Image (cartoon, rainbow, N blue to C red; front, side, top):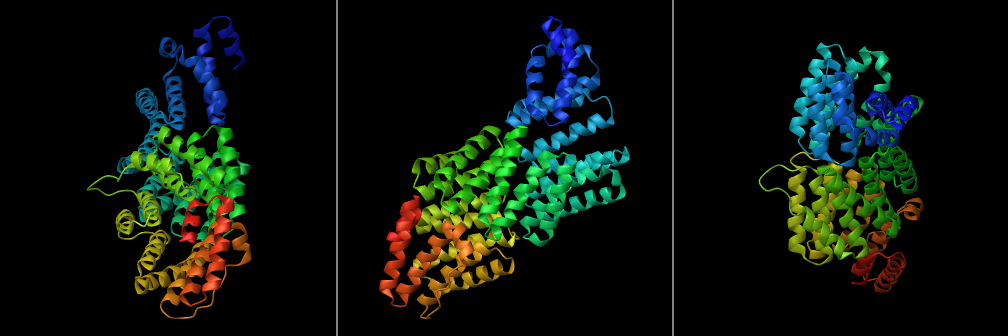
Length: 497
C-alpha cells in the first residue's frame, strides 16, 4: 500500500497499479470496504490502461472486488458486467468457482431463484470434484438461501444437510459453520423452530466473534432478534438489531443496513416510537429500491405501509402502492407478497372498504401457497377474523380465532397469542358468553404499546356486548388518549368509532 501511494504521487500509475490492486483486494478480504472503495476509486481511473499488464489472477481479483462493491451498492448492471469479466479472466478452477458463487448471489438478489439453484447445484458438484471443499460449502449455503427466498423450505433444509456433511467431514472448515448457521437459523425461524434456532445462533455468534466474521455475526444477531420479538421482548430485540445495524454500517453493507431498518421500523411501531419508525421505514424503502433487491423491496413496502397506516401518512402509502402495484399476473409469486397484501388489507379495513380488504387477503393466501409456514397463515387468519367480526360474521371469526390462539400459544408467539385472545374475547361476548377480560402479562404490555391498544379496543367491544357500557366507554377513552399521545392515527380512529 505504501509503495502504491509513493508511485501514484510520483506519477507512475503503471508501476503503482499492481500494488494498489493488491491493497484493494486485501482490504476487501478483511471486510474493510471503506479502504477498498478508496483504492478502487483510484485504480479504476487507470484500469483500462493497465489491466492488460497484470496477471489473469490480478484481473480476476479486480473484477470480483468490483462485483462485491457494485452488488452492495445496488448497481446491478455494473455487478453483472463484473461477473462476466471475472469469469473470462478466471485463471484456475478456484477462481472460476468463486465467480460462480457470486453469480448465484446475483441471481438470488434479482429473484432468479431457479438460476441461483442451478448455478449452486453445478458449482457444488464441480467444487467436490476439484476437492475445493470450502467452495462446496459456500455453494450449498447459497443454494439454501435461494431455496428459502423462493419459499421452498424443504429444499433449503436439504441444501443445509449437504453443507453439514461437508463440515463434519472437513473439520478445518469450522469457520464456515458460521455462515451455515446464519442461513439455517433463518430457515428454522421460518418454521418457528425457535428452540433449535436459539442455541445454534448463540454458538455461532461466539464463533463469529472468535474468527472475526463480523458480517455473519450481525446477521445472526438479526435472527436472534426475531426470537426476542416472538417472546414479546421488544427492547431486547431492538438492542440486537441495533447492534447488527452498527456492524453492517461499519462494514459498508448497505443492503443489510436496509434490511435491519425494516426490522427496526416494525419494532418501533410496536413500541409506539413512531417518529423513529417512520425514519427507518423511509430509509429502508428508499434503499431497497435503489439496490433493486426484489424481495427486500417487497419487505420494505409492507413495512412502509404499516408505518404509513399507523401515522396516517397517505402520501407514503400511495407512493408505495403506486410503485409496487398489484404484483405479477398468472405466475407464482414470492411469499413476501403475502405480507404486502396483508398490509393492503389492513389499510382497506381501516377505510371500511371490506370488499377490497377480503380481496387483498385472498391475494395474501395465494402468495402463501398451499403449504405455508403456520405463523404466516396465522397472521392472515387473524386479520380475516377481525374483518369478519366487524362484518357481524361472529361464528366464522370465532372459529378462526380459536385456531390462531392455539397455534400461537403452542409456538410461544406471545404477542400474537395475546392479541388474538383479546379479539376472541370480543367474539365470545358477541356470541352471548360472558368471558373474563384477561390482560396480557405486564411485562408484555410495558414493552408493546400496540398490544396494549389492541387489548383496550377489543375488551371495550367485549364489554359493550356484555352490556357494560360505562366500562366500554372508559376503555375506549383510555385507549384514545394513549393513541393520541403517541401519534397512532389508526388506533385513534378505531377507538373513536
